[in-house]
Amino acid sequence: MQPEPPPYDPNIPANPSDALATSQPQFLNNFQKLYEAFEVNHIPLDALSGAGNHTIVQLLEQENPQQTQFSEISVYTKDVSDQTDQVFLRYQGDGTEFQLTNYQIYSVDATTFFTFLPGKIIVYFGSFITLPSNVLKLFPPVAKKIMGMTFCPSGSTPTNKPRINLLQPSSGFFTGMEVFATPGFGRASPPCYYTILANF
Amino acid sequence: MTYSITKPDAGPSPEIDVVQIMTNFATFATGLSANHTELNDPNQGDHENVILTLQTDDPGVTQDLTVLYCKNAPSQAGTQPQLFVQIPKFLPTDNDSTNAPNEPMQLTYNSVNIAGPVYQSFLPGGYLIYFGSTTNITVPITLSPAPTKILVAIATPNNLKVSNPTPFFVSTTILSNTQFMINSNATGTYSFGWMAIASV
Image 1 (cartoon, chains in turn green, purple):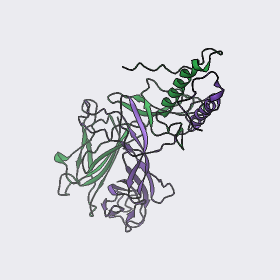
Image 2 (cartoon, helix red, strand yellow):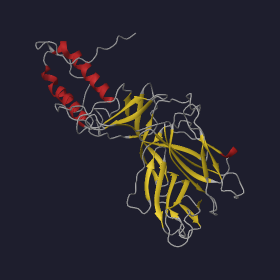
Image 3 (cartoon, helix red, strand yellow):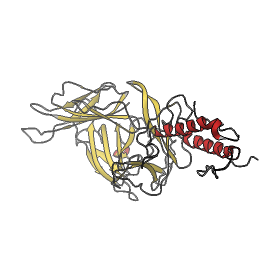
Image 4 (cartoon, chains in turn yellow, purple):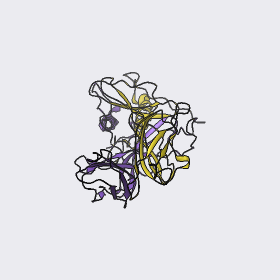
């Protein structure tokens, strides 16, 4: 088993009178450590061009909001309740902290989508032709507060004005809403496009 | 001369490798100054910008390391580098039982339009949002830049009927990947606000 190489040592050569034969391994080790550390997320120091530019940016989970001086903003990650890490931004002078990423976006189905806006806002959007039991379900079911809804009938004949009845929250989360057609429209729910903004 | 992790040689005097040692220190300082505040500055090591070089594959997420990176993404405008984020997987949870794969999320697109009349921006997940208003619904709304597919097209009347002050009926019809039509019983002078979300 190979012994662990010594760590980076900022205090070499240890003695001003050391012969290079003594401090040479220390120099080599420090140059190696600097090279390896710098190579993480960066184009390496001996690259023909672009040394120091980033390849990727890995952000290690932070326990607390990062401090910022004036003329600085900070981008970092922090653990979020019921999730893992999300990306945050904090404005200058220990200013307001915003959550920039908010969820793991995934494909629900061919007509049901969601995305997010900074600040823990989720945007549900999609379309439906018919709704089982007139209920439009929200995926993911994590909306704590419905902030806005827009429904627009789809199709070439504009003869409907949908009526919306928000279902009572379940365990603190809104799971969906009933959508009814104009009386006399001839069907229970009208085909619609919709967007719903919610806080979660 | 480039950065070397094999120098200095062992010997009685540093003189034989002094140039290489200086080169290593200089190369490190130069490399660090790319994207970072340079050495000997009070803010040394802080990021000043982050230039991300194009990645061919998703880096993936390990441990608590959220990753930001640049990768080519296809769209109707061609294949271009975009900013992606990948966060540690957290699904399923007690609230969201979806065991969704931890797909990377596209955060950016290569254009916005704040000049109008077809305003446009982008949403996380590879979506474009368009919005505007029209006073002539006989002309279809044409989205530019062209998306791959319109997912949602919503219109709302901005004024009421004059004779009977109730909202106009309205519906929308998606005609193609770039156009949708607003349908209404509106007559006389009117305007409609509209919004569409599409995949890039």
